Image 1 (cartoon, rainbow, N blue to C red):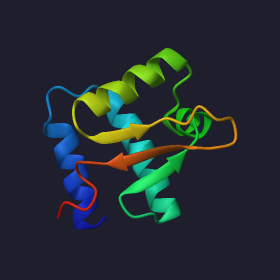
Image 2 (image 1 turned 135 degrees about the vertical axis):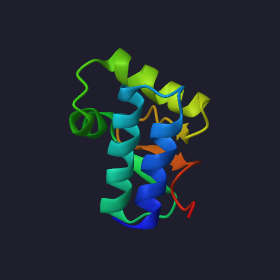
Image 3 (image 1 turned 90 degrees about the vertical axis):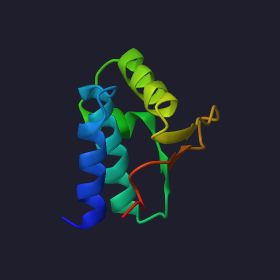
Image 4 (image 1 turned 120 degrees about the horizontal axis):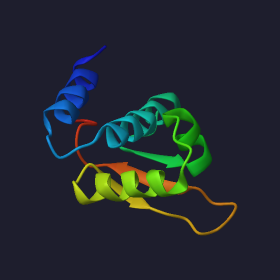
Amino acid sequence: MNSTDRNIINVLFQDERITTTQIVLYLALYNLFLKRGIVNSVFISRRDVMEMAKIKSFYTYHQGIQNLQKLGYIDYRPSYHPHKKTIVRFLKGVGDD
């Protein structure tokens, strides 16, 4: 585990406003970021993130994503096109050493 990973975990667990669902969603997004090696942003599909985060409800997923955005952790740019993926940009944690 590098210092960026530790920083992300510390930021998430010290923020009293964040829920366990939001932590799991953020970590699933971060895992995709690590796998794909994209700087500060990642293209996602809802299905992949929900599966990785073990979230079954669309409502829970969207609430978690909206709250992460409101709390300033991510910038969420949904794609409404069936063949284009959504872009998520990290605002806190990733790249903050």
